[in-house]
Amino acid sequence: MIAHHAFAGNPIISDKRGNLSIADLSEAESAGSLRVLPLLEGKPLISSVVLPQGGQIWRLAWQNFGVCHNALLSSQQAVNTFLAEQQNLDEEEKRISIDFSHGILSHDRLVYLGDRDGVTFCALDVSPYPIFSGTADKIAQDAKWLQGLSKAWELPSSDARVGFVDLRLLMTGTDWSDKPTLEELSIAGHARAMLDWHTQSRFCGRCGNTTVLKEAGRRRQCVNELCKKKLYPRLDPVVIMLVIDKERDRVVLGRQSRFVPRMWSCLAGFIEPGESLEEAVRRETREEVGIEVGEILYHSSQPWPVGPSSMSCQLMVGFFAFATTFDIRVDKKELEEAKWHHREQVKKALVFNEYKNQQQASALKVHQACSGEERRRGSSIEARVDAGELAPMFVPGPYAIAHHLISTWATNGPEGLLSKV
Ligand SMILES: [Zn+2]
Image (cartoon, rainbow, N blue to C red):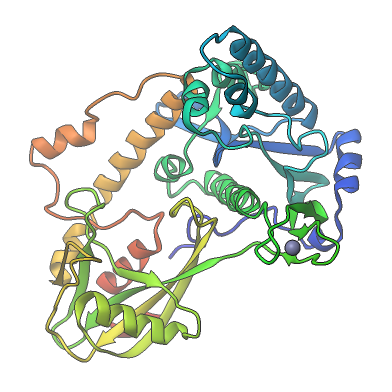
């Protein structure tokens, strides 16, 4: 039984959300009770330490607003110096290239996340702005600014490493039994979802004017006095379903071409406007594998802030779907392959050691990313694949709702399929 899915169970989302303003955040900053999480292009700033017993553990690297401000100013200076030295750029390229300071001084990129024990927590987007293009992009990647930005932060302890790390890597590198780190992951996911939404909502969809952050980041508003459209953070709901053949005791699992080798998972798809959740389950199953579904049973849902970059946060809504027809006809545009899998096959695919190995390999990569080390080629996981020690197939790890739909079915009879989350 699990308490929450990964990215749910956020401990700092609080009831005070309705009353806070940027002025309140400034007051908290003056009182020393404001903690700021910097994110660079969706990657949270984290610290990682090596544990005495072996392995690594990561934590969010909360900062003071003042430290963030100084880090950004010094990065801007480094960029300006760098650009001044570039003889081959014209003035326009220099002008559009990199601007860290936009909005920082007016707190336009500071977003309230929540409260706990008298401390107010915020996320700050420290990505350069506007977004790079062309030559400027190349400069940004090559320049020294990022190194400078990564070194400017306060460390929680002298043996900690700090850096901006991809949220998906943090997710796969988090020990499923480690509740405090799972809570950190849920905060990072919320922060990323909010900042991504702000980045994508800078212009009004109705009149095309710019929008500004309001109510400590809980919404935005168009600056055009005739329009004043209010924008609220959006979610993109997705149905994810395990299609079950009750009689023959088997389920449909599919493979998308982007999956790593040997991985199989549930079917899934976006809900369309004007459609109920149940209708979406039936339509997606019919479209992807040509199977008709009768009874549908809700299991649980999971916030998923690590989907495609154009979506700030998906909400995965998980179901068991009982098939009434059984011939699979795969839509090759959606799936590479889909098959019925019997219970014993699926049980073998839920190999605990494999998840543990993957998690530990990812935790090491997280630490290396903080240390600025190159990722090593050929991890121990890949080495074991060559040695033929792994199961012929596996399903996504415990961080994904698909894992819990599949494992709930594999380890329970029909009466055990109701949600345990
Ligand atoms: Zn407008």
